[in-house]
Each structure stands twice: as C-alpha cells, then as structure tokens.
Image (cartoon, rainbow, N blue to C red; front, top):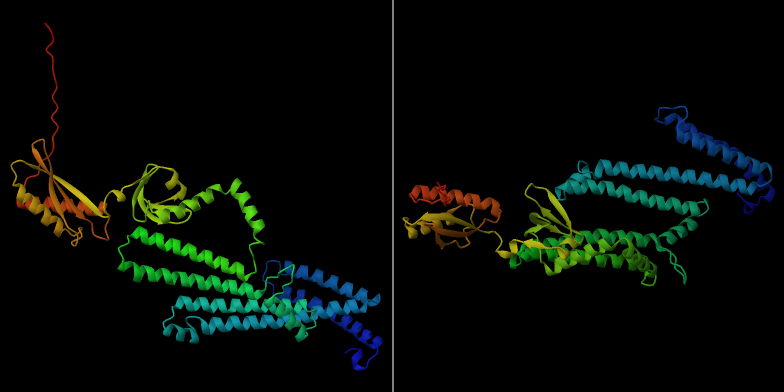
Length: 441
C-alpha cells in the first residue's frame, strides 16, 4: 500500500510505522525457538540463541528509535528486508529439505528409482553418489537465489530478482573490468568432470586395445600414458582460463611472481618436474626396471612428474625425487638383459656324460612351472676348470613371476632331475697349502 493506492503520504508513513512497531518484536521469536530446540548442555543459553537475541534486540531498538525520531522509511526498509529474507530463507530451506529427503529415499541404491538404475547396470556406488550430488547442486542453486533476493532490495520483485540472477549467471563485462559469472564457473566444473572421465576412457583404450597390438614394453606404455595425461590436463587448464576470461596479459603478474618464487624457493620443485618430463621422454629408467640408486636396489613401480616410486624387497616403497635420476649415478640392471631372463649354473665332474647332462638340464628348464614355455631355453658349456665342467642354462621367467622367485624353483627342479637321473654335481673346493719351515737346529 503506497501513494499509488490513493493514500496520502502521511497515511502511508503511519502504516509503515505501525508495521515496523508490530513486526520488530517478532524478531525475538527466533532465539526463543532456538532456545527450545537447541540440543546443547546449556539449554537455557545456547550460544547461537544468545547471539541472535542480542542482534534482535539491537535491530528492534534501532527501528523503534528510528520510528519515534521520524526516520520511518529507514526503519520500514530494515524490517521489510528482514521479513522478506526470513520468508525467503524459510521457503528455500523447505525446498532443500524436500529435495534431500526425496533423493535419500527414492534415488539411493535401495530406493525405488535407485533400484531401477542399478537394474540398468549402473553401479550402486555411482547411484549413491548421484543421490548426494543432486541435493548438493540444488542447495547451491538455492543459495544463488537467496543471494539474488538479498541483493535485489528484499522486495522480492520478480523482475529485480531475475535481473540479479542474470547478472550472476552471465556476468558483466566492460572495457576495464571483467566479472566472473556463475555460468563460467559451472562450465569450468563441467570441464573438470568431463575431462577426468574422457582422460580415463582414452587411457583405458590405449591400455586394453592399442598397446596389446604393439611391441612396446611396460615402461614405454607407462611413459606414453603419463605424457598423454599431463598434456590433456594442461589443455583443460588452458580451456578453463579461456572460459573465465583470463588472458595472457592478465597473467603477466602471475608469471613474474612465479619467476621470483622459482628463483628463491621453488628450484627443487621445478627441477623435479623437468626431470620427470625427461625420464618419460628419454626413458633411461622405465616402469618395471630393477635399479640401484644411493645404495638401494628395487623395482621401479611408478614415474610421475615429481617423483619415482621404487618397490623394495620388504614390500615398502621408496619415493625418490626425479632429479636424483638425472644428477646422480643410477645402475639399471634390467637394461643389461632382457626382462625376466635368468641364468643357472651347475658344476659337473669330468666323468659325467656331458651330452646327457645338457639334455636333462634343457628338458628340465623347459618343463619347469616357473619358466615361460614359449621362450627358448639354452644350455651351454661355459668353463672347464678345477676338475669340473661348468654348465650355464638360460631361461625366461613366467610373466607373473619375478626372477628372484623363478630362479629358486628352477634350481630345485634341476636338483631333483639330476638326482633321479643319477648325474653327479661337483662342488668346488679350495685347497689351501701351508708352507712350513723346519726350524734350524
């Protein structure tokens, strides 16, 4: 009711004053309800209720003083804004509770709609995540609406609220400034989520479809996947900056700050990053290689842009900065031989049947469970010394076994086969000769 309704200005101000004096005491109902429903040890004076009681008393006193001192429009603006915000907040809270309850009862894996989704092949874990993410997105949208109502003056004029929502979603750009819009932020979040799933899908295709048709070893495959993943994330980051309106000119101060930071405190981080790129590109060390660095021997499990994980014999993981592989000496035992190839040596006396012993050794290694049956087995005479013949057999460990596990199994199979065939195995003995002098008489 205003002057456009045919009322005089005095009548409108009197009604505004009456409305202010009548509504301002209702602010005390908020801390009273909180005091009744608060679940705290001190039920008489919960902290939140005490704070709101102080705020309500302050607002009520200010409004009453403004009315009696003649500042009726100020008091009416404060009370009407608080009233409209209270109604809006209550309505949005009810919508939030309704969406959360509906998703928790129907969209979860045990709900009616969730069971239909799981029947279509969607994992129950993903259905439960969706039932949590949807209420979260709705609550975020409700907060945006609440902010639009608060910034529109509290009158809940639909045109003003819609204008504020358009400003929040679309932003406002002029010649000097650029305001990031909510639409751009949501698009960036969508790029992150979509990029994550697309990168995983592409990596899965390379690992399961493309790499099995090539002759690339495990290290080369891991390097390709690593470079592909990091390159994709860099492109996604550039796309997000473009969506947010960040240009190269606006990043000048960021680059300057980074250069100063690199010069003082980020040298090691940048050095490890560059070293990780070199390791993935040149591959002096690959995933699966057995390396020795700083006196520790282990198997390379993972190479990232910052560090490399080395699996030790005690099942622990040693994390080594990538710069150590570039600036220090590293022994790569895998590079000296084919992956999985191991040798076993046996000493036979001169009296043994050499051809028969070599045939038994070759047949035993070929039939051993720990040896890859598709790989060739070789047996050669490598040495004749100390009254015995040295036979060396070379075999390839099974794909799911390491050399340390396969070699003892092969040695045990050879020992049993030679024992059953009656072939003697010599043992090297070191004869020590001591010179003694007869003391002079």
